[in-house]
Each structure stands twice: as C-alpha cells, then as structure tokens.
Amino acid sequence: RKAVLDACGVKPGMTIADIGAGTGLYTRLFAEATGETGWVYAVDISAPFLQHIQARAKQENQRNISCVLCQEDSVSLPPGSIDIAFACDTYHHLEYPSSSTASLVRALKPGGSLILIDYVRIEGKSSKWVLGHVRVGEEGVRQEIEQAGLKFDARIEIPGLVENYCLRFVKPAE
Image 1 (spheres, rainbow, N blue to C red):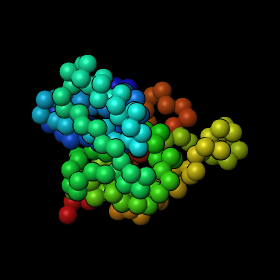
Image 2: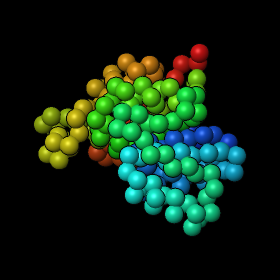
Image 3: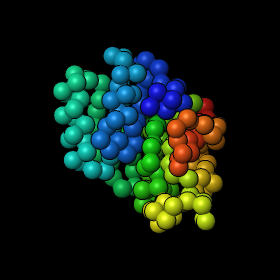
Image 4: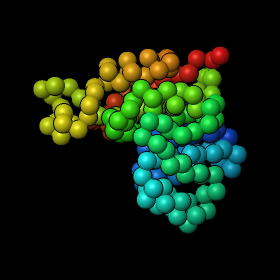
C-alpha cells in the first residue's frame, strides 16, 4: 500500500479522486496523506460501497472525504477539480471507456495525473479468469487514455504487484 501511495505522489493539500473506490481502502489512505487541507472524492457506481465509506470515514473521524455516486459513462466530478485520479482494478469494468475517460480528463487540473493499476491481460499467459473478465490489455488501455487527451508518463514498477501493472498519465498544462 505504501508503494502504491508513493507511486501516486500524494502530498498534503491535494485533491484526489479514488475512481471505483469500492470499500474505500485507498480513499482512507489518501485522506490521511492529503491531511486537513486536502480532499478525497470516493467515486463509485455502487451506493452501498459509498455508504460503507461514509460510515467508516465518520467512525475514523476523516472529515476530508466526499462520496460521489457516478454514472456508468462519467466520473461525475466538476471540471478542473482534482490533482490526481486513482483507479485500481477499475478501468476494465468501464462499460463506456471513451466517455468515462473523457469525463475524468475534464475533472483533472492541468498538470494533474491519472494513476491506473489494472490486470495484465496477455493471451496464452494470463489466467482464464483475467482473459474472461478483463476486456483490454495494457497497450489497449494506454491507447484509449491517450486518445482521451492524457500523455503517457511512466510505467511504474510496484513491488508485490504480480498480476497487475501501474501506469501514470499526465494532463498537459493548458
């Protein structure tokens, strides 16, 4: 988890969007890392996950978290509102990757970044589950995100990630 946070480059005062926040594991870690002057949006399509995150944030007195119920084709965040978008094992779930990614690009501030962790999908190498569950491999993901307007920055090696890769993209400064 620490290596993932380090890869994201989170600093106090930043605004982070945890896209596909799920149970909120990274949401809570980002809230701690951004501190009292930062903010974290837990973005998910599942209201029960967001209710869980809200309850847990209240229990842990984390007041810098907002839950955002997104649409299937949009992250539902205001334009220019986030420094970092983080998506862990989420991208392959997007039913409308083009419009979802376009909305994410709009939400990023100029110079903001997308950190994306997803499953390695290689015909003949990946597990049956991955091949049946993950719609596109790393190169396809990279192409889709670059077509949406982000610039590929780096493939980040994170110790402990075996079936996953981590990519960083940056929104060009306007």
